[in-house]
Image 1 (cartoon, rainbow, N blue to C red):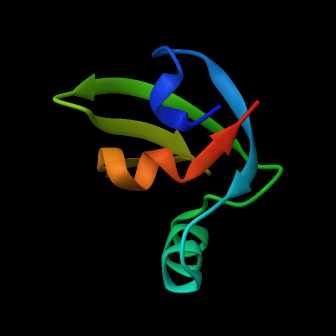
Image 2 (image 1 turned 30 degrees about the horizontal axis):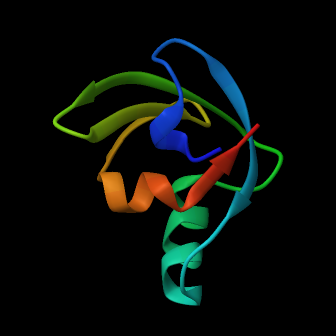
Image 3 (image 1 turned 180 degrees about the horizontal axis):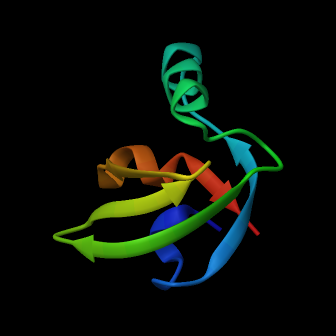
Length: 70
């Protein structure tokens, strides 16, 4: 399921990062890699604040929909 469907506070494992190659590379540099853990901290207006690799990152809904977790 996409990251936007996850409830705040739940830790999830990243299964796949989709989108165009430049988008995937950008997200990988931020720490969104398959097999990594991500936790949604909060959601505001569709945008998410997440913890990934000991960093807190804000990403838009479009980007979050490209990150599949399970």
